Length: 319
Image (spheres, rainbow, N blue to C red):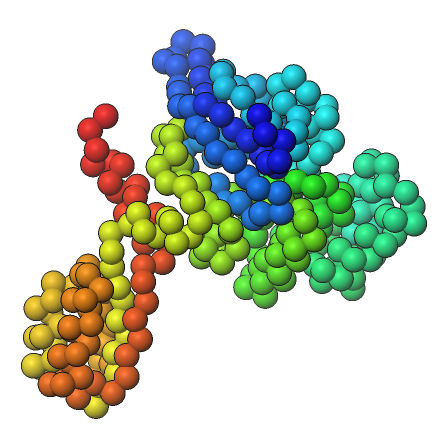
């Protein structure tokens, strides 16, 4: 194992054998690495193996076979050292409901043996990062669901651990609070922390992650940076088009391109085409010459498009 990685996973498998039921192969020999200071996205549909992977990496469950090393510690043979080197935000909130926000943070700091002066500095920092300063004397039980979630993430960042696992960290947050939390995640990574993110919000993963792994039915179906993942999907481009007038002839021409998606009004159209780069340029050229095109924008498929395409192809492949 190379200790230069924050996480190194090799041929990891996990088999569950419920009493009286068939065995479930939750992980089927997955391997991946995570660089220190990266924001790493672990994505997949429900039941894909994400939670099992996180449980193994955080020492909550042992693997059936294979090896996982976190911050240089073997998750099976050095569980205490592994746990001391990381912080985890699970989907379930974990804090003292009858303590204030400040009380929760101070208790958490004492639990992690952070010296009082250093704890005060870090607490002030995370209160500011997560917009919790005005709520510092509010009891957790009186916070909204979104505020509780922010407190949970703030506690993890307060710990100062080199590795932080965030499981659906922005669940229940409104757009403004979500933006605050995402900004804090970026800032934490810029300070050298490694962030492992699991989320169903693919625009969030697209915006944040340096590297992604997509799992399905216990196997890795795609991995790499955002550009690597997007190249695996079916090539598709979305054209946003503005015309002086969307005539019947223009509509007929656009429909003749066999679009995956098409909508229009009197002066604008949006169309998604599964065509090559050169074919897209040819379509735009003809619209400019013969259909009174005023303005256009071209967008490649986003991560959600690619994600759905990859999962669809997995279902079509024979088992």
